[in-house]
Length: 332
Image 1 (cartoon, rainbow, N blue to C red):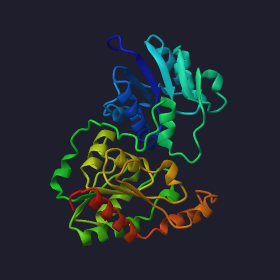
Image 2 (image 1 turned 180 degrees about the vertical axis):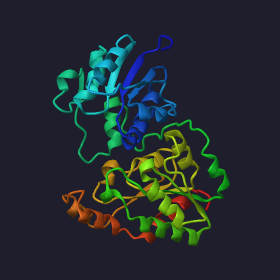
Image 3 (image 1 turned 45 degrees about the vertical axis):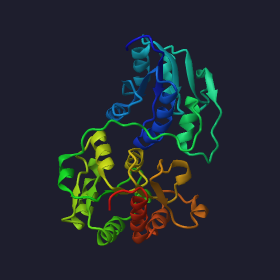
Image 4 (image 1 turned 60 degrees about the horizontal axis):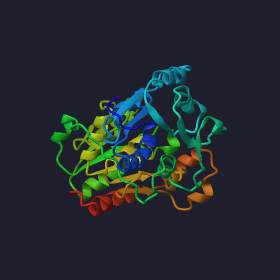
């Protein structure tokens, strides 16, 4: 680490969506403390994404395995951190800064771990969006909206240069199972509705495990679609999403990444509360079936939960995205 600046550590969260929701608070903190050297501690798969965040000066990687927190803490011990902000609520997340002897350790009390912290942040209101939980930990003003992160991204994949605008991104997958996956046929129908309104191209994105699903959507929209599922790194996925005119998505990490780069996004929500974990930023909109509040106690792996999500009409999603793109002055 360089210079005599104060050194601060953030123990980051473990999922792509949560990471994206933490980015505005981190940006706000850096805006308030530009002279601090800021390091984020994350699992190795998330490190490439944080290399793009302009507020982050250094990245430390969590060691894997049961002894990972111990090894990580020992690695950090000889570095001049003055403060550690701990985003996850687990004991495990508290151990590296504790073992590293970082004098100031700040976070929520979590799982009865308050005695491991030097400053306990009062619990956030249950209805508050998750992005403000991170802001509370960091002690930044709870302004609405928090600033979008400044991301330094690579060029999108070469395949994008062969597509004429408008380009609509489609994210038909979701890691948490069928209850968060709007039907594939609905994504296809919504894209066809958009295509009938405005000549456009589609880029279908997802993880390697979601490649068959994404290929099915792309083939149904051929010759106006390409599939990039499984072929992008996190930085190139972010760059691809930023190059899109708009994005149609499930409630997923990719949805949060699309919102973080400022692209208009329309997301399908079933039982999950978008007021708590919806996409951030002025260009995002969530669609959810009417009367959903009475159904929140349904198990999320229940067929009824899938039926509720599927009740969002494709035409509503298509029209909502067209409206978002128009309002954001994206070229149609």
